[in-house]
Length: 299
Ligand SMILES: Cc1cc2nc3c(=O)[nH]c(=O)nc-3n(C[C@H](O)[C@H](O)[C@H](O)COP(=O)(O)OP(=O)(O)OC[C@H]3O[C@@H](n4cnc5c(N)ncnc54)[C@H](O)[C@@H]3O)c2cc1C
Image (cartoon, rainbow, N blue to C red; front, side, top):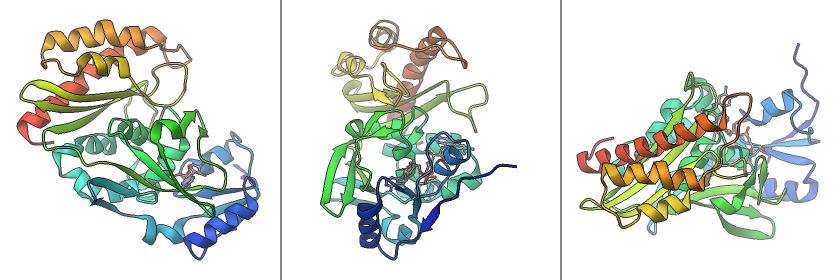
């Protein structure tokens, strides 16, 4: 029998109420969105149980949305993975990577509960939407009784289960600049089974083309260096930017530049050498997918 620790569940009546409760009780109060990560961590005793869990579900109406406003795509933190799939992010080729992540994400039931905010705040190398959002240069809006502040996603993701958010802050929105029509993205996840399991290598790519010239490119991986959270491979991006999109350029980027920038770890899943080899494949595959999507206009 699995025994969860006991805790008190607080259901806020409004966003303001949630923030005041967190201000009074953090760090002994922890927010819960879909609970698909938090409850598993509590069950498995990976984290210390808080005295209170603040159930954010009463705020779903307010914090579930996907919209474009002032040149930015804005996603409410409590938007579920299922709701993302019902939005324009799944029909507009500029956001094709969202479709790729969705296809490999957990189970159908999980997609109804899991939220984008929870995925980011989970802060692990397995946070697939975080890996994708990095290539959109995403930022997050944090709210507390002291006001709001914006952090880049890279600033937020400090290390595994360590974020730049204060214990009394709520993530309320993810935002990124609306990409041009000449851009698209892709997400690649390699594993033995590929679904219902964390990837051995996950990677996201964003490409913006002017003809066949790479006007802009961003790539991210589940890990690049010592941190165990997704990170951009900026040296590789710098090498690719401004070059013509050819097999030779992609080959050099993956074989020489990426492998110079990337350090891969060996653990009980697989070796660092295998991870590095698959990272090179993921880089090329992601960029080819973006290229085809931009040229073909379909996801
Ligand atoms: C079987 C299974 C399969 C999975 N498959 C995948 C997968 O394929 N890809 C993947 O990326 N993940 C996967 N996950 C992990 C998890 O489901 C996702 O990370 C999910 O998006 C978490 O969202 P949630 O709303 O359930 O977060 P929760 O569990 O509610 O919260 C996660 C963390 O974020 C904090 N938090 C949540 N919302 C906020 C907020 N608004 N402000 C501040 N802090 C907040 C919580 O306090 C907690 O620390 C899987 C999990 C399971 C159990």
